[in-house]
Image 1 (tube, one colour):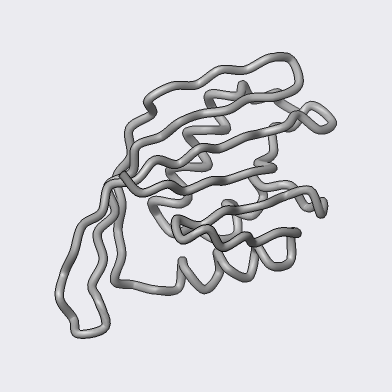
Image 2: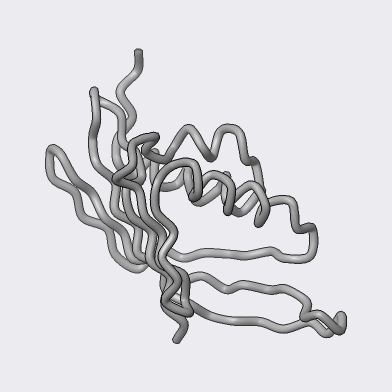
Amino acid sequence: MIKESFHTVLIKHLDLMQNKDIIPFLQTISEQEDISVIMPNGRLISGYKDVAEFNKDWFADIDWSLSYQIIKEECTDEMGYAVVEIEYKDVDQNGNPYNKIYYLTLIFKKNNEKWLLVHDQNTFT
């Protein structure tokens, strides 16, 4: 098995999200109950099953797109995190397009030599 660096896994995770590629995306997140996502409205989604279901529904929506820029990333032997600026484009319920900028904080933990997402926090600017 080839060991991937934290940076490589981070880019892969973001690209899979950007491309709405759900099956390999889910392979970048922890299957343990320790995974959590905090939405911009403060809603907490926790546990692999709920996080996976949320992402499956979100990726199935064809209206949105995003681009990203990594602002900061740090890692140790066991943990890594990144702050990412996201430009998110979507349409509202009336079909009107809108854009939002938000910060995405991602925390990955190394488990059996594999970097997996354990926390995802979204904060509107």
